Image (cartoon, rainbow, N blue to C red):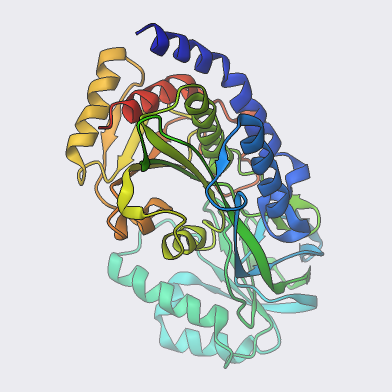
Length: 419
């Protein structure tokens, strides 16, 4: 009991370390941990240095497990102007991750999204937008039915990307939050989304300059472990992806503090704990690359495992670990109900978090590829707090890490309770 209490006090002091990790990974120097200006590799080297400092051992000859990806990047100019109004990248507009590059000044043809269900109006839009920018206004005060939404999504996607159409590019006007992402390919058209109250009835022209480059990039997973004191050939796994969205142009980067510098901070904190307090099983720490582009790093690992996946007792994937005011959600909780109930029991006994909520299976993060290989696993994420996600506002300065200490203590109890 004394050892556990002493260890928990140690962890309580390590909230400063967690903040240090999040601050570093989400800083401008790490370029959003993407593929422009090698931000991804900068982050990987930082995590490797943490592994060395903590005293983890590599599973192979080195900590890096390299693999290659294709990714569409936006390394240079990123400018969009509606008539005389210059918009701010990330704040007022985002470029579609599939977008091709473009430069020039263009007149426009506008259509409302709801009118895409009218075949005649779509035909006019195709004819009259030749050589122009097609502007689709998806702002509406009415709710689309499920059937209409599916039809409209298909038509809008075809208008945006079809190589048979001869418009120069597309602008989507929306009142929704601007969430960016990445893509492993490039379409033949330029597409932008504008979050604006701009009156498009007066819009005459757009001026745009955007560089896009589809590249082949060598990235890596980062794998280290602490040998088990009794059964080193059996494993517990701590998982977190370290990549994020990178830069959109040469000026704007997406910090990714909650997604997923916070998960990496959890991984490294647990690494420090288990280095000081070895488990009966070996504990493996895997910082995965290329999650944002389609959980590619996880796929590479399970297809090229550094140890027998059948020897994994349990795996927990930490993604979005930076809040917790409303507790945590446990994906696969209903699949491994005995483990979920144990997690709830630990939480209730110590009043760590407001709630431990159950969820079924979902292929929404890195755990999924392991689960599909038969590895018992949870994906846990925090609830409540700030809503910044896949945007320029996911900053270390505003990430509260509200329940990080108690969340860490709960997960230590969970791992320590696995037989």
